[in-house]
Amino acid sequence: MFESLTDRIEQARALDRERLEHDRQSKKLKQEVDEISATLIAEMKLNGIDNLNGARIVVKKKPYISDFTALEAYIVEHRATDLLQKRLTESAVKLRWEDGIAIPGVGLEEEEKLQLK
Image (cartoon, rainbow, N blue to C red; front, side, top):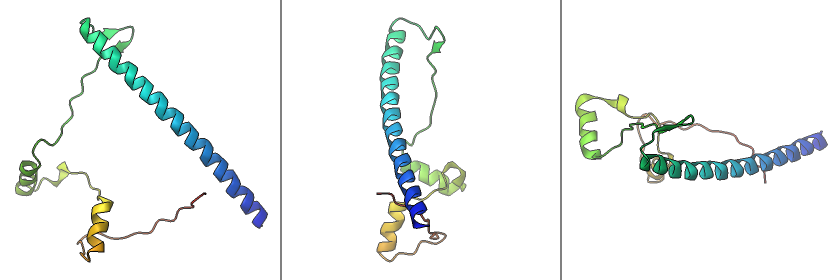
């Protein structure tokens, strides 16, 4: 029984090493694509081109917070919590808990994970 568990642990380690290597390669390739894309955008804009050979410059408008105080006041006044993502900043919660501060509406769940070393 323990031999098969040991074998499966080794298999998991080997697969995890392979996954990490693929992640590294994927990140490197993504960086290369991003760099080439930035250069192509600049060159295409310089030449007044926004579409060439199936490649086109797409402008996407994304909101960002330019004045957090004003946004916070708006959310409170209009009860517009739908503007927020519903997730916690774990580090901020942990710091409060370490200071003995209970946060209403925040629970604690346990997650089991196998650590492979």
